[in-house]
Image (cartoon, rainbow, N blue to C red; front, side, top):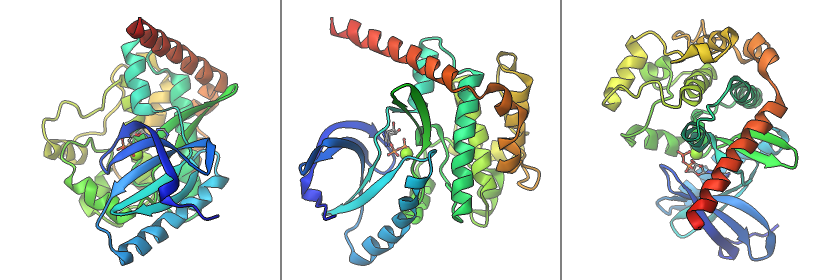
Length: 298
Ligand code: ADP
Ligand code: MG
């Protein structure tokens, strides 16, 4: 199928990231199908285009995985690469901020569904000999379709080199990086993604990133390296199995850290995985957001 970047029409801006903006868009040739487009500016150079295309190839297999956002393809426009993917409703960083604003705190059912989906995505990638490298709430999306709500992981294999160079220069970022990754830089494994899942679960549960007390990027890295691993702030709000699950994700030594198979079999998921509860929480949040929007309009 011959798709041309000139046929792309942007409807609205839906997000701003480190690399550029994300829009809701469609193709003039297929006006009924709306999707998300990530716009990344880069030096226009044919060799770089080729390596990027190769990096992005891995994304094609995501169609097979029910826990990853489907990649639709990439287009090039002068100085810009356009990554087209399935459109979701919102990312979990927004979800938890809104939930805390409405005092609908992210509960154990939501956490269990997130953990389950992310672990399955890590497993899928691992089986394809890949890692995610950037697990964090803004790369975990939620999407409602009829009577179900899905949790989907996005943004992997998006030009590994680009992600790496950006991550190093982005001063304001909150690290989800594991100690071994900070220490070695390279040579880490999928267990690094498990650490990032643990940090993300704490952020969702507590409504803030566990290292918000640190004042500089350097302090955060130092805390990850030197302090005991973070845990839930108010763990009485959650079952004991939840805190235990998170502690298994946050073992500082990757050898002690749990494997995804062990976590997928953990009693926290057996006790708290409940698609209906996830759906209800999402519906309730949507109601709050809609009524706020309506009152702002009137
Ligand atoms: P980051 O992940 O660092 O926030 P991104 O550029 O990847 O930066 O994404 C920016 C924002 O765009 C995300 O936080 C998310 O809210 C939104 N977004 C990204 N991809 C999608 C998508 N497929 N569907 C809906 N929203 C998306
Ligand atoms: Mg992202």
